[in-house]
Image (cartoon, rainbow, N blue to C red; front, side):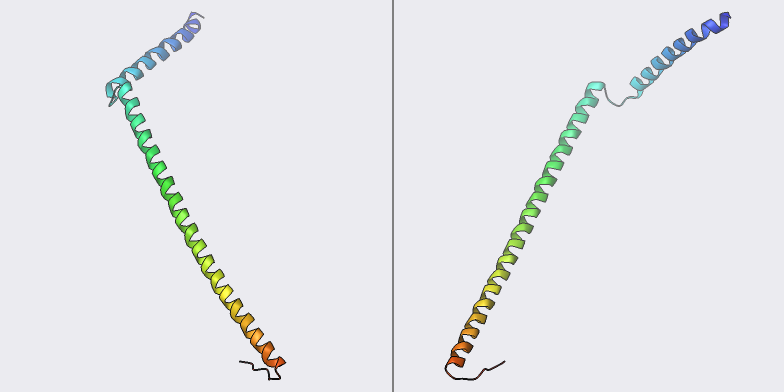
Length: 108
């Protein structure tokens, strides 16, 4: 029974020794100190944030250009439609006047 009572202590001791050994190996093989690693990560995050901001701005600009292109195309089509309506009204008016004057209907 004395061996069973030592097993939890052996486990805790082994856990502590393993954790200490892992920490020591990590410190020995770490490429940078903790402060240097945090500084490097901070710089990387800042650079990625700037890249994301730039990409978002470029996307907004492209969307704005596309919107302006669509507006210009719509305005061009509206202008063509107005011209066609005016020409149609003018042709109908001329045909009406011609018919009132006793003329005949000319179909083109």
